[in-house]
Image 1: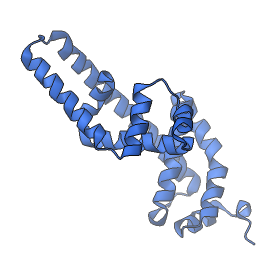
Image 2 (image 1 turned 180 degrees about the vertical axis):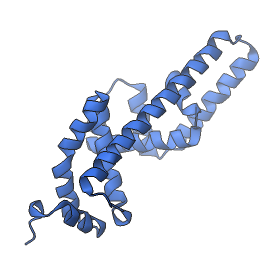
Image 3 (image 1 turned 135 degrees about the vertical axis):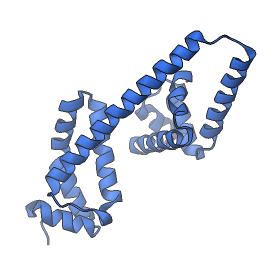
Image 4 (image 1 turned 90 degrees about the horizontal axis):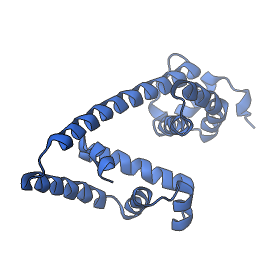
Length: 191
C-alpha cells in the first residue's frame, strides 16, 4: 500500500496530474495551514485568507490534469496564493473607485424622472440576473443578502452542508459579476 505522506512533492504533483485523489488530499493537508498563514500575514483577514486557500485548492483539483508545475509544488502554490492576493487587492481598488464615482453621481444627480427611470431599470436588470440563477443558488443568495442569517444558519434552514451554501454563494457571485460587469458593485450598494 502506497504511503502518500512519504512521497516527495514532485511525486505527489505527478500523481495529482493523473487524478489521484489521495495525492490531492496529501497536498492539501501538507500545505493548507502554511498557505493560510502566508495569506493571512499579507492581508490580515482570516475569512478572506481561508477563502483564498479554499479557492486555490478547488482550482488545483479542477485543473489537475492540465497542471504545469515547473518550479516545484511549494513555489507553485505560494505563487498562486500571492497572485490571488494581488488580484483581490486590484479588484478592491477598482470597486472602491467605482463606488466613489457612483457616490459622486448620486450626490450631484437631480432626482428627476429620468434618474428614477434609470434607477428602476438598473434594479430590474439586477433582479432579472438574480432570478436567472438556479433556484437553490438564488434561494441561498437571497437569504444571505436579505437576512442576517450566517452561512451556518442558512445551511441548517435549507438542510444543506455549510460548504454547499458557501459554494452556492461563490458561484452566484461569480455568475452575477460576469453578467453584470461594473454594475455588480451597484448590487451591493442597493441591497
